[in-house]
Amino acid sequence: MIKGIAASAGVSVSKVFKLQHPVLNIEKRDADSETEVKKLQDAVVKTQNDITAIKEQAVGRLAEEDLAIFDAHLMVTQDPEFVGQIEEMIKNDNVNADFAADQVGNMFIGMFESMDDPYFRERAADIKDVAYRLKCHILGLNIPDLTRINEEVVIVAEDLTPSDTAQLDRRFVKGFATEIGGRTSHSAIMARSLEIPAIVGAGSILDQCEHGDEIVLDALEGVIIFKPTEEQKTEYAAKAEAFAEHRRSLLELKDAETITKDGHKVELAGNIGTPKDVEGVNNNGGEAVGLYRTEFLYMDASELPNEEDQFEAYKSVLENMAPGRVVVRTLDIGGDKELSYLKFPHEMNPFLGYRAIRLCLDRKDIFRVQIRALLRASVYGKLSIMFPMIATIQEFRDAKAVVEEEKKNLSKEGVAFSDDIELGMMVEIPAAAILADQFAKEADFFSIGTNDLIQYSMAADRMNEKVSYLYQPYNPSILRLVKMTIAGAHKEGKWCGMCGEMAGDERAIPLLLGLGLDEFSMSASSILEARRIIRDLSFAEMQALTEQALNCSTTEEVLTLLDNAIK
Ligand code: PEP
Ligand code: MG
Image (cartoon, rainbow, N blue to C red; front, side, top):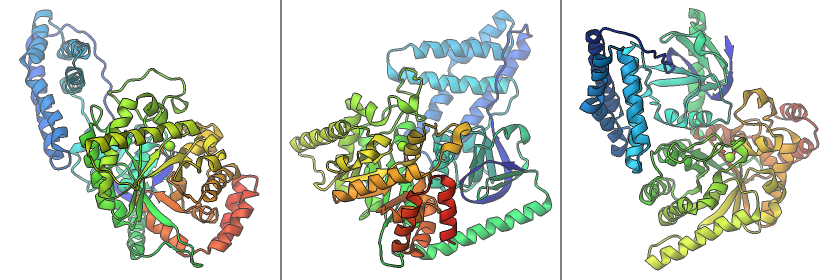
């Protein structure tokens, strides 16, 4: 039995799909050219079959323009220059096929990477992908591929990138377990919005299983069992069924009000990463979208998304959520979120570096495109714009000024936009929480980002398991920062929400309610449970409880207080 961090609730009994890319050891050897040319030709056919199969699986799930990438890959395998040069090298130098493919591949990659035209530079990535596949086939190595999964599996990997996670097909992927990561790493957040059970930070699990092994994934307790016994399989299958039954019973609360026993109302909203996630928010009775992380729009693309593409995405979210509010967060890139096509100098401390609003205010060319797309989409629903990582009043003013300028530009062009767009900010840097009363004079609303607020308050990298004990949402220091933020907003008559993971944490909800939080935004799958909890509580009692919690000195004291008060 292996313990990891339960990151997305659920239980699965299934088979292992090992997502491990083979590491290639390629060395030059003398070899018989006839045999090697045959190996190359077979590998080319296998590579082409792979690509065609992946494309077929992806039809209907990926957009037309994203499917075009597979045609580009096929073209590389059919390019007589590319394959022809490998064959020539095998024959002329009497070397092994993998070595020749490596040499010629690298030469082509280098050539494309050095071209001025961005279109050709991007093709280098296609060649890299195809050359890797080709070499694996020459060497007889298996390449795992998420889009080709067509039976029920649990994925076991070192980590999943956000775009890996976005590609998961819920019909087949019954869960995943990763070696690294924490509750707030992005693969964990995506798993919750896709409602796929997940365990992260489980240590070296790849060494402990084989592709196709049976596996129990208990993402309620954070337990992984490889090769379970028959009894264990029966026990966990029953647990999975009980969990599914509990989920079904919560659906009765889908249209119920989010109101405490003594009549205090709050709003329950969903966090989304892509326009299609809105469906999950609606299906789980979400009243609004409290955080739309637009960076995925940028991360899943091969170049900066243009105004039109962004407009379509925002319009779709606004329309599907209307009349409910949609809080769209402007680009929050940097930290652990990179863009392959936008390279910035290496930083010693990326989480403290050039990211989010800092980057957007420096690269207004990028920022303006997003703001224009948002303003144009605003007529299709109830839009609120939120800036991430605000540390100073000046940053907020500068960001707001860009919105005002783009409104003027659109007016001149005769393009319509709503006259009722709230402009708010994430409170995720301690400086902003401490100065919340001043910020509230200028911002229309706050949303507390506890994932970063805890990281920065405790000076503990949220991706580093070694210091994960410092991720302490219940530490009185964090509760006091949350209290300051809410009080600052209320003093100026503004609303305060929370979109960090703490908002959906069942044990934290009573405290946040008592602190006066107005809006709770969380993974869609947590909304109904949160509603059940809130409807069972008394606001007055939670206010009194919170006063006591604020005067505790440790996380443990707060948790004991909570567990004694709430059964
Ligand atoms: C946060 O920091 O709490 C937050 C919601 O933003 P992200 O997790 O995307 O950094
Ligand atoms: Mg954040």
